Length: 59
Image (cartoon, rainbow, N blue to C red; front, side, top):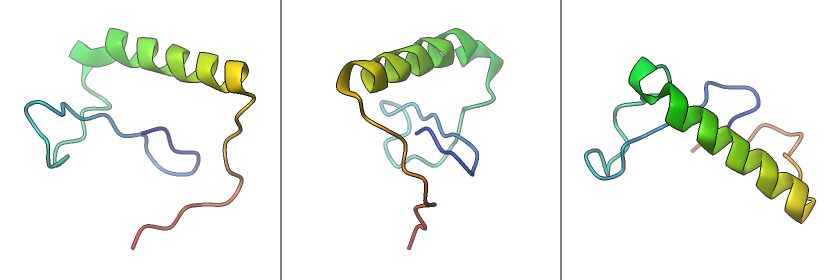
């Protein structure tokens, strides 16, 4: 999960389907995180999608 105004989130959906352990700062996943950020940027460029300007408050 890429966030504009909060910490990004990265979960192992196989081992942690409840998304309880945020592994965004795990050095072992640095390469995977860089790959995912690159894929997201490519998606934005290909679809002309944009990041919302307003914060999405969670309930």
